[in-house]
Amino acid sequence: MTPNLLYLPILLPALLAAFFLALPSRVKLVREVLATAGAAVLVAYGFVFFFVKNLELSVPWLGMGIDFDLRLYHFSSFILLALAGILFLIVLFSTVKMKDDPRVREYYAYVFLAAAMANGAVLADNFVPLVFFWEGLLVTMYGLITIGGKGTSNRTAVKAFIISGFCDFCMILGIGIIWSISGTLKMSAVSIRPEGIAVLAFIMMIVGAIGKAGAMPFHTWIPDAGVDAPVTFMAFMPAAFEKLLGIYFLARITLDLFKLEKGSGLSLLLMIIGAATIVLAVMMALVQKDLKRLLSYHAVSQVGYMILGVGTAIPIGIAGGIFHMINNAIYKCGLFLSAGSVEHRTGTTELKKLGGLAREMPLTAAGFTVCALAISGVWPLNGFISKEMVFHGALESGYIVFAIAAWVGAIFTFASFLKAGHSVFFGERSKEVASVKESPAPIVIPILVLALLSIAFGVFNKLPLANFIQPILEGRVEAGESIDFTTHALSVFNPVAGISILCLLIAFGLHAYGWKKGGKKPFLASEPVHKFPGLRQTYDLAEARVFDLYEQGVKFLKGLSFVLFKAFDRPIDFFFEKIVTAAGRRFTGILSKAHNGQYANYLAWSIGGLVVAASIITLLLK
Image 1 (cartoon, rainbow, N blue to C red):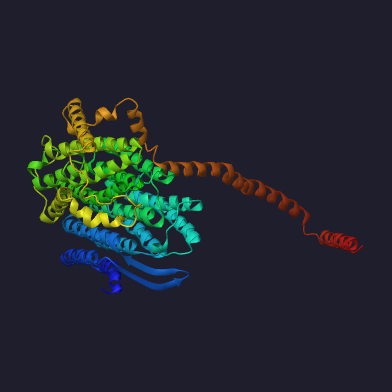
Image 2 (cartoon, rainbow, N blue to C red; image 1 turned 45 degrees about the horizontal axis):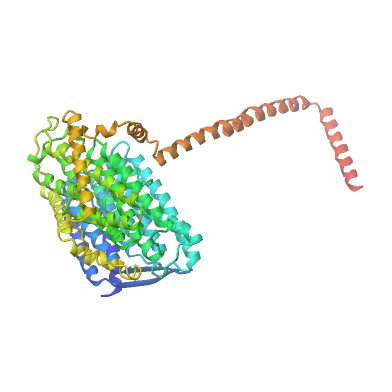
């Protein structure tokens, strides 16, 4: 296969994006058919590239080592296939969900442009093209959020742009340090021990990766976007594309660019970030009363498992983190699309307004249930397998506190999805929503496909582990360490899995208790936790955005601008507007009196001036 074919995953969606932007809004059927066909072609090429695996393309570009380098190998081909599959399902869903949106042209243009940029970032083997494609996603993210059309959509888009832009700036600084250390911008030629100034480069690069993935503290725009942006955007970007790209890049940083050692300070740093993201985000998800906002916090929480797994620097933990990346993209996308299906028929995702929809929307309910059980880590679904691998990695790291944090996350994940499913599908039929019917096939099919993948990747986990995950670690682990995970005891018959099952039982009991305490209203099932002494005050602060670094940064800048306005701007204005003008007025008054129009007076001024000038010249010449 010719290396020039590596242009195709970038150019095809980019050309389609330009075409959709030029296509008039009234031309509907052509747009939907072409979008679906274009996405299907990318899936087909994704399979072709996956089986080819090894291709490299290098085109001289700007000199000084800045070349347009693309590289296809096992890891990038795997991510490329996953991106194409998610894109196809999102586009199929959008043919119904977004067809009447007034900005539908922009929507499809942004979606396919995002696909082009994501594919370029995955294939890039030179830091400069990587930055170009990586930054291009900022534009598409901003545009897609504004399409939500809510009153605060533009503000949320700006927030997402600034937070992500800051993380990307940190990544660029890290790239600059790597360039100065290694003398090359070719990514596959870089392999550095994180020592000295390289530690700073590692941290800066990590900020770029986890910022893209949506980890804490760079996550705060995601719950806002869950309400303000189209649900297809949430399924497309935060739930799938950004997780795949962010964790892919994180894995490349820790496996290729740097040699992360288990037990090192940097490994510990990543595990702390992962554990904190798991617990803090899931605690926020538990108390949400809007389905999309609840799912948004889970999109944040789940990335914690990926970071924790990769951060262990232990083969089973790394593999678990990467496997959880693809599993999360599957079931989280399915959950957001399920929420979109409910919204499409009922017009709302507020939990208190919903209930009993399983009888009228059985396929959506079935897909949601499978994906919810998968994200909760219920055996034998895919989430159980990848979480168990992360648990094992955390325990093998020697720091049991990280495994405990992951199990706490598992408890509240299942509890929050019991609340969500009970409120939306299995509770008493709500009277606030009129009778509805199942969503059309283009909406339901992607949900069911993702649910089936959640089952398949769990029941037949040896296939994705052997074909997708295991080859990534070949040649990247220490001698003597096993990377054969297909024979690992990932079943319910081991102590670690037993603890996980206990966590699920605790979650069920917590939900049952909350349901009774909340007057048998499912959406109030989390109130005992919400109002628990100590937690209530913390939740109040969180809901007031006290812990939102962006919002606090905005407040700080507003306060700083107020202080500068009062301390400098007003005094300077007072000096020039009052003092200077008053002095000028007084001086001109004196001059006006001196210049009275008398010829003799002017002659005296002239003679006096000449005498002064002559005196000064005489003194200077002495």
